[in-house]
Length: 255
Image 1 (tube, rainbow, N blue to C red):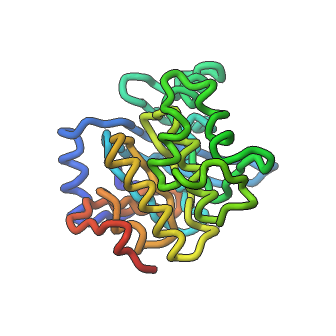
Image 2 (cartoon, one colour; image 1 turned 60 degrees about the horizontal axis):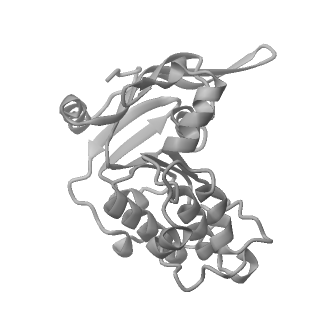
């Protein structure tokens, strides 16, 4: 893994060297993203080298503007890099065109964002069904909602659900197509800590039951304690990466 001008801990170096032995869901090499507005260049990512392992929960930490969301958007097929390569298993995403990226997002990736983006006129079950109707190998909407603890709320409309329940519907919608990868950008950012823990428990359950590779963006170091690995971003670079030897269940987290 490149230093990118930053000093990484000895622990991070050991994790990086052992990563070659783990199955990689993503292999990212030299990933660079530069946004140009007029004569101004903003370097969102600066030559990142990173693997995300199959079946892990990886917590991506760092302040606003550190490159976390840009990284997630690129590996999720929502954006193109300026330079570098991204491999998903044996597929080079950075060689894909728009149609291929659309198929990749549809068949392999589930997204969970800070805002739920549910359709108000549809019940929880119907919101999830929107995905299952077009997915390649979906689970039943009822099963997806049960997995996130909403078996008794599936016929309620969003306005009848709390914020945490709405976010769990969004998670059920993302996982109902049984994606290989779940990409979460501040999924508890709009929630209080108690409700946020319930949402994190849902993500934990999905990872445990389905083996879904999960990347979780957060500003909150406390939330990262549930992850298998913690990856810290700063100024468009990865500045620390370490295995979490003392993972805590989401139910025990505090922030």
